[in-house]
Each structure stands twice: as structure tokens, then as C-alpha cells.
Image (cartoon, rainbow, N blue to C red; front, side, top):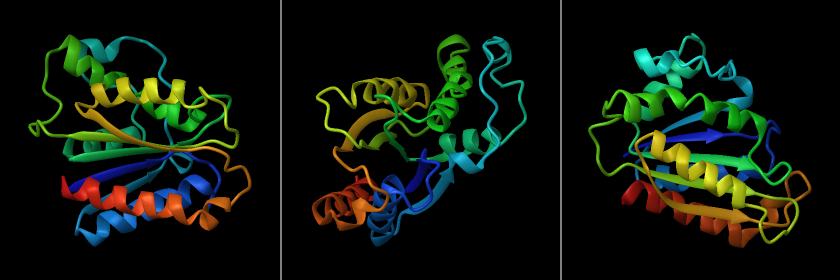
Length: 189
């Protein structure tokens, strides 16, 4: 099972990364193949809405998204992990998702299949410092449509509230266990 994960936090060893590492351990325990992209460390130009991808199926920018596109196409499972900033995904995560407009254009404008695997699944993992009732609403909706553009079904989300301090997730044994089991499930289904 090829699993591609996207870490949208700029904070090294932060709560989102701690949770994703548990998911990775779960995937590895089921012999899943893992590719992790740390979005904050990549050169990803923002989408400029030029429409070129609607004609060619390719983006005009030659940057780190080229490797990401290929990994998305080859993946059986895709995990997007992002903390919440102002009730939404981080800028790094949103920039990456916006550049998936190329995949959307391939799928919906050019009628090209993203992948030959019809059972591709997408999972959102998100952590918020606050506990607002609708804290994950924007992130979940954006992830749903991003996964659709990637040719995946949005199957699950792991959403954790009230994790503000860096590293606090390491002491949340319940969340860590959920993440590990989610990783096993991702690699097994």
C-alpha cells in the first residue's frame, strides 16, 4: 500500500508532526510504503490562476509540485496533516492544495483519469489550539474537494482540539493511540 503524507506545519516536532509520526508508525507496522512531504521545506509557487492547466493538464511552474503530482498519482492513500490557523489549514497546506488545480483540470476539464486505482482514499489529520465548535469546518470542506481533485475519496479525519503548546501532543496517549491505529487502518484497507 503506497501512502503519501503531507505535513503542513512549519513547526518542527510540533503537535501535527507528532501525530503524523504515529500514523507513519502504524502504516509501517503493516508494511505500508511511506512518502512524507514537509510542505514548509519545499519550493511551491502559489497558483496564479492562469488557466494553462485547463489547456495542457500541466502547471506552468516547474517546482517541487512536480514530485508531489507524481506521488499523488501513484499513491493508494493520501494523508493531509495540518494545524489550524484562523479556523483553516496553514498557508503551506493551502498553497499545495491550490496547486492541485492542475489535477482538477486534468480530471474535470480534460477528462483524464488521475489514477488507475479506483479505491484511493484520503484522510485529513488536523489539530487546533482552541476548542471552537466549527474550528475544523473550513479545513474539512477544503480537504474533501482537494481529495476529489486528487482522485481520492475522503474517507476519514482525525481532529484534535485543545493542543496549543508545542509538543503537548506527546502527552496525549489517547490521541497517539488513535493515530497509530489510523495508520494501521490506512495501510490495511
